[in-house]
Image (cartoon, rainbow over all chains, first blue to last red; front, top):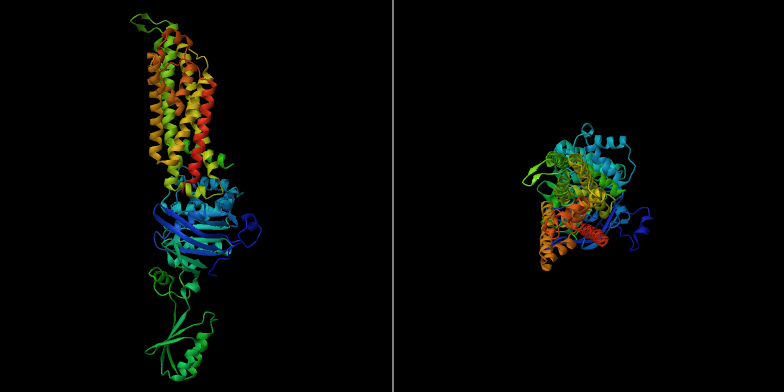
Length: 328
Length: 282
């Protein structure tokens, strides 16, 4: 699913009637600040229940895109639909939770009062117990009555997570959700995103921590200089998996057997086989069994997997693309 | 609904920040000093003999206006510096991000802020003003001719200044909006005094300065209406014609047309603020 299913050009009202409207759909977003083009022709979609990672270097336009989705910044061009409604309609944000990159909450209110205010503004009946649970979920249960002004940055970010989650969202937008958190907090956020995903809540995650994105995201959109440099599922972006084998006494028959498994490259007694995308997990065991039957000594079998970080750096440095051409 | 929630938050902010305490302390000091001063007026020895209670009431009516001006100045500075952080400050700090990402209209958020600030500013002016009137009554037995009208006009003056401060805070930074609002308030008052002097001297050109400034920013016009409601009508007669230059007496009550203009002014400035806030990138 590399290209978003574009909704028809009809009014948002009609779209609202269709059940599978994406959580986010945007097309042709453009924004200039003075002479600087921050966002240029960005289009993507986040399906319901999907976790989409937004990656890119500083100044790539990630936060600007998020703010345009939420109606905080006016796009110069382009369209946004949130949960099936045009983003110019405030009701489109009815079931949206947002943790901004610059998280700051009313310092004169207590954590519980901040949540109360957001529940009232969201106009969703969330009872006191559920609000307490929400604070407990982010580890602030025993600080509910304390003024936000006395909170550390990490605690404020945790409160921001609670604010994003409190009004039973169907879409959660997290902009650098772990920037102020310690390693335990980061794991908490990862678990939180996975639990949202399991409940069918769509998540748009902007993070510099590529490892985190790789662990939780179904799909990734890579932005560079305001444009979509690449997008796709992790499997698509990371390319085919490979397996490296160190073999002794490999003859022509063994090489022939290796070639039937996938494209082969050889360097000394190391053989690298590119596995098919639809590999169902039996290719490698079968290959090893056959090689042993052929009298080959199998010294090592290593899976080779390019990391998202390597792939991201490759895309940003315009090195050879993988399975998907960068959209330039 | 959104507006009421935001108004409640704004009032809570005012209550929990030091603004309220600073205002309270200032007001109590002002009230105590004025009570002491007014109590000394009766039986005061002057060059022309001991002041009678009638004369004391006359002086009291002048002093009441002076103190009320002090009150309106405190309210002006207090609300202007409260209005500044409320829009510009929240946008600058990032507080507005999570708030405006809720299903709310920006105009409703603005209305809430405005209502909250008005409730706070007007509440202060009316309560502190009423306390001052009661202090004067207890000290010298002077009761202004139209205290309710006077207090309402003082409250209206606060509304005008607050609306201006909100407009400024939607276009310039926090600090600048407060300073500019208070500066304009002071400039209009000075222009009003200059206009009064022009009137007293029969110079139409100078008099027009006051008239024009009162139209551009209705704070001084409303203040003159309030003074007229507080002062002893005898004072004008006693001071004689040509008192126009005196900044703490007002010759005539406000015309209904001017009140309508002040209302239109507030509506237009509010509309401009809503427009500017609507278009602003947060």
